[in-house]
Image (tube, rainbow, N blue to C red; front, side):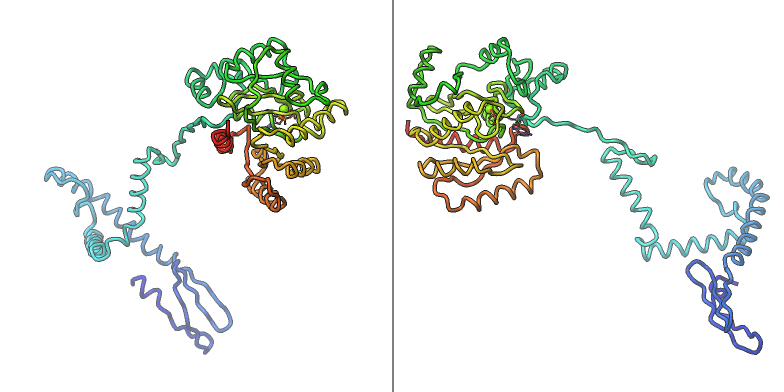
Length: 418
Ligand SMILES: Nc1nc2c(ncn2[C@@H]2O[C@H](COP(=O)(O)OP(=O)(O)OP(=O)(O)O)[C@@H](O)[C@H]2O)c(=O)[nH]1
Ligand SMILES: [Mg+2]
């Protein structure tokens, strides 16, 4: 009896009633549906019984005959599975079935070998890729850390850079670091005199730096202020230089941005304590163009009168300087614009000073929120005339947007009438 005929329905009479409908499902299980009860007969057992007995007989006879046959096969020089290695009936039926299998395979070559071919392709691919997951354990890929030359976030020069070797130092130098400085002066509230000396040594001849106490600046206009500075520091200033300035509330990241733009960390000191910059810092970019870092306005750790002086100075500076080509109004992306920023914008609008909004510290919030903040500011200042669009987005820490801001500023410098 073959499996097919066993799977067919049987008619059973029970108590004069006709029961029928038995089916063999895919798993070889037979369900018999009677009028009152539903019984399940498992075809597995039945099939297993017969098949297992067949297999048992086959193996027994194979074991008996294999001794004799194998010696004969060896003598004849035959290798592999031989028809003598199987019992007569079994070998015949197996050979028939294998013939049928070959026929089917030739007719439909893809179907039976689908899984095996897939596996071989996967294996080939994995071998080609160098993953040895043949043992079931995928080989771990080596993590390659690439240093972004424009990323200036890792600016602490004492963080094991020397131990990392020459290559790292070269990379840092390319990224714009001053590698002669042993450590960055970031977050150091007050430099010692020796640190300041080191900064001065490493600053290079292309820029100059003026330390002036702002509280002395009350009621003094800028040129006389400069004269005073020249007398004190014995330097000749080119007062006709075109200037681009960075303004913004305290702690918004002006000095950090200036460091990033000039690619020299430690040139201007920065701190997480608002109100660190208490002087006007001029940086000469090119022959006659300078970038100016001003003290911040708003909340700062300083006396009220000093803060008032800073604010006055910033306002005066942005509204009266003729040579002022562009004001970069820095806004902390996280906090957005505050009333004091609007005050300064009104002043610049009245004095027709060109200004551009620069969103800072973009690394601390999600890019989608940065974009949202930018569109919000653009919308609110749409009616203004002196604003230069678009709103720029930068991060002095990650270096994002620094290059494009540098390009914008250098373009202004190039087209400035000198
Ligand atoms: N995460 C992050 N922090 C920044 C970034 N820029 C500046 N900071 C931090 O913000 C703090 C203030 O930075 P400063 O550059 O000193 O800010 P400032 O506007 O010059 O401050 P004042 O001189 O006090 O007006 C410091 O702790 C900086 O490390 C930035 O892009 N990302
Ligand atoms: Mg500062």
